[in-house]
Length: 436
Image 1 (spheres, rainbow, N blue to C red):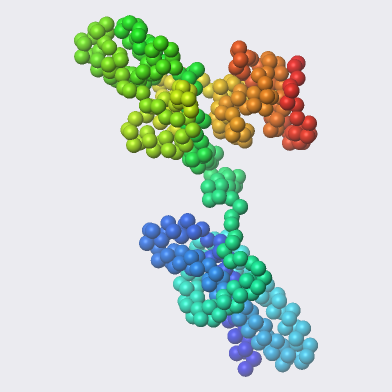
Image 2 (image 1 turned 90 degrees about the vertical axis):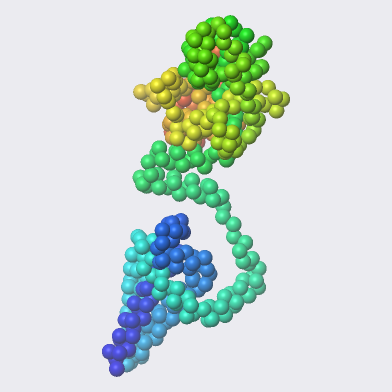
């Protein structure tokens, strides 16, 4: 009869190994992957998703089955060893079963499952569903007891709240995959740009009015046409009396149609008559909403105004798309990168370069909450408009002003500081700046 008991012990260890592997696989499987496979018609994935939906009952069935198998195997093994060796057989049974359970019923199956949780979860899905159904009544009693004990201890069920939002958890997962070499930097940046759309306002991506190309609508027709053709843009704002008073947006295609309709006579063209009415949007509008508005109105161009109605700049569909995919250049674009890496490890940056573009290009993490451009960040931290040659250290970088034009910082040199040096500088911030 010993061989029958021994066979039962081996069977219990196999059952325990099954439950151990199932626990690791079902708790570590990707819910997103299971949902996708389920939509593709995979029946096992549908079962896994249903098990994940009743996580408490599933874990209860796993633990109950695993403990029954382990306790049963240990009890039978103790009886076998006691029959063979007498009272000292208890010690032998304890040592042998500890080794067998730890290696073959815990570590080995869990190691296999943790290396391929999705595949293993698909294999154990149907047996686990049957186990949950069979143990259902007993699990109901156990859950009731556990909930009662938790209430006595003052633990609120369902009170757990994740530290990070779902968006931040997605970003962290992509960053981890990039760190492991499974996602390229470009793909990570695109995904991050997509997640950032809800956090950005139109003012963060717009082209400031000082960099806009505009044309006086009162210019003679021939001169106006020459200026339009001299630009590399297809949509040009028209103004009267002062550049901030935008009265229309002239599309190059409409201008060419007008020239053709007048048999090439540019002097007879009325730019104001063919210009489209300007579309003004508030600077605090979220970029995600502006993207929807572009699609809804079937237009790619809008003028940005502040709370007083003054024109602050312009925003295009391309500006928003560039926040996701990076810079988009065509054959007519004037490429001005504004970021020039130097052989000594420093970076020369135009003051008008957006902080987000610099972070994307150099894989840095300079904050962009208080300022949009690099020059704005330096002015915000310095609490003044620095002079040429002044240097500042913050956020682990040393910023030196290379060129200043009137009240604007035109160019800076940025040098990353080693971590130890950065920590020392953070203890003694140099906000006033030093000239050299």
